[in-house]
Image 1: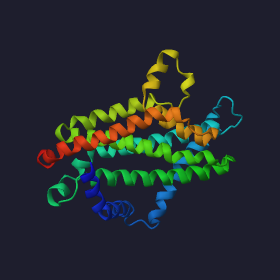
Image 2 (image 1 turned 90 degrees about the vertical axis):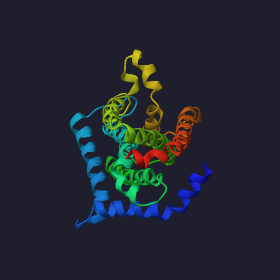
Image 3 (image 1 turned 45 degrees about the vertical axis):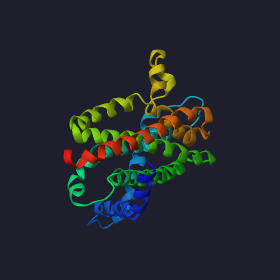
Length: 264
C-alpha cells in the first residue's frame, strides 16, 4: 500500500496534466472552450428546476416551498452522478487506455485516478451551477453545505474501490461492463433520488437500508434541502464500507496488475 502511494505521488504531475489534457481535448475547437464546463451543468440544473418546480409542482412533506422537490432531486442527482460517472469510467478505463499501457511505463493505478479526478472536477462545477439555481429559488446555501465534502469523500472512495475491482474484472471478462450498465440502472431506482424513502412500502424498507448509496445520497439531500448535518452514527457504516472497499481494491490491484497488460 505504501509503495503504491509513493509511486502515485511521484507521478502526481502526470496525473494532473492528464486531467487537464482530458478537459482541453473535450473542448477542442470550441469558441467558448472551458466555459462549457459551467454552462453544461448549469443548463442541466436549470432544466430540472423549471420542469420539476413549475410543471410537476411536486410537494415535500414538512416544507412549504414549491421548489423543494426540485432541490431534493438535484441534490440526489448530483451525488448519484458523481458515483455513476466514476463507476462507469473506471469499469472501462484499462480497456480504453490499453494502447497507452502497452507503450508507456507508468503506475497503472494512475488511470483510475485520472478518471476520478476528472469526475470530481465535473461534480464541483455541477454543485456551483446548482448553487446558482438555488439562488433563483430564494433557497440560500447554509453552513450545512460544509458537510458535502464528507459525502463527496465517501462517494469517491466507495466508487473508486468498486470501480477498480470492476475495471480489473472487465479486462478478463468483457461481459462485466455490459452487466454493470444494467445493474447501475436498477441501483439508481433502489436509491432514494427521485422519491422519498418514506413513500415506499415497508417490505422494501429493509432492502433500501442495505443500499450503501442511500446514506450517501441523504448527506447531500439533508444538507442542500433541509440544512442539516449528518449524524456521526449514520456515517459509521458508509465510512467503514468505503474505506474497507478502497483498501481492498488496492490489494487486489497489486495482485492482478502483473497480468493486466497481457490480458489486454
